[in-house]
Length: 140
Image (cartoon, rainbow, N blue to C red; front, side, top):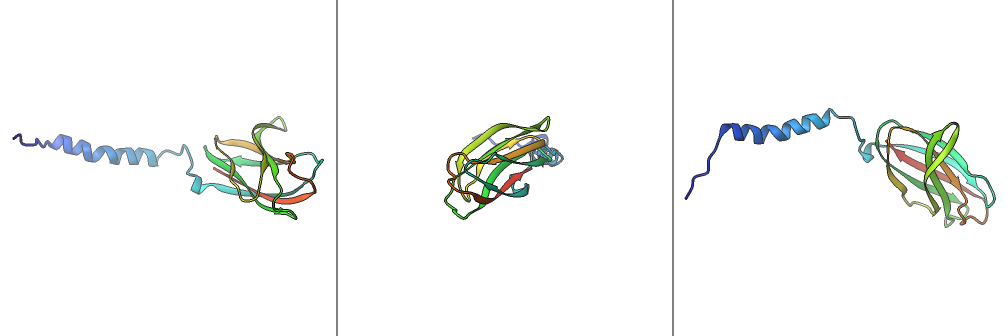
């Protein structure tokens, strides 16, 4: 039988390494935890033939974003289009979209970097009559 060797230097390293890692990470302000996200709410009306409605929001840190319709009326079963993009030269340069999303569904869940963004709401083919809505954007 071999006796296990115990060294003070090995003990110090095994105890200090996790503490140093936690200390270094807590000082980092890189990616925001989605549970700490800001939530912006926007209201509007989407029509069968109307142009997209554009809203602006700012991500103050890198992290994860998502979009959710929390109210659609008078027909809560309507499917509405939503897109997210970056604000560039006064316009919205779309980089992700979902043509048919409904009430209380998280969509466009993705990582984003700190910056200025835009959200567009439109008829992606599922709106037969004017619908009012509330849409929420959760972002860092």
